[in-house]
Structures are given as C-alpha cells and as structure tokens.
Length: 97
Image (cartoon, rainbow, N blue to C red; front, side, top):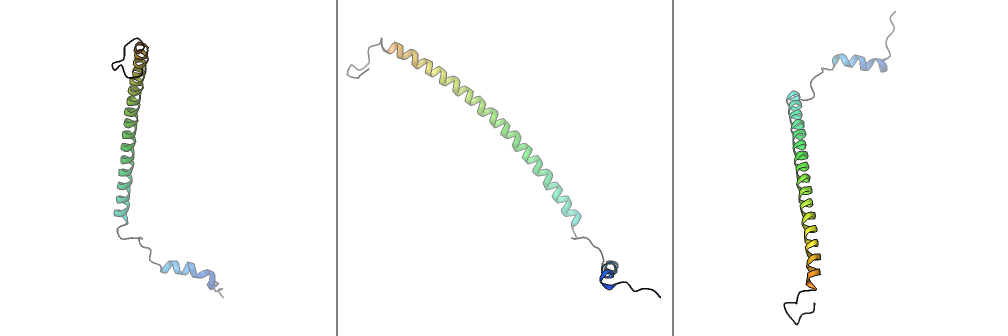
C-alpha cells in the first residue's frame, strides 16, 4: 500500500501545479524600457551638470585670480600714493592730512 504524503508538507507542492504564473503587470516590458530610458537620461543630465559645474569653477578661479591681481595692483598704488601724499599739499587746506 502506498503511503499518503503528509498534507502539511505536500500542500505547497500540490498548489504550485494549480497556480497560473503570469507577469506582475501587463505593461511590464514597457515600464522596464521606460525606467531604463529615464535612468539613462538622469545619468546624461547629471554628467552635463557636472561639466557645467567644472566650467563654473574654472570661471570662478579665473575671476578670483583677476580680483587678486587687481587687489594687489590697488594696494601697491595706495602705498605709492601714501608716500607721495606726504609731499603733496592737500586740496582743501582746512582738512586734516
């Protein structure tokens, strides 16, 4: 006589034959494609922003260098004028030097 399988253990294997496997969503392929396109667009967009950020940093560095040069020139000019200011008569005699 054949032994009956334990119903508690046999239930999952018996049910697997009855369950009809189907896709999780009818437009699964379309959604996957769309998600891939969106991911590629995001990667491209972030790379573009990264390039723009690098360019902006280069421009900021160039402006900072120019500002430093102009500041140095201005400070040298002020030092030279302070030396000559002692020798020059003030425009308004009433002002303190």
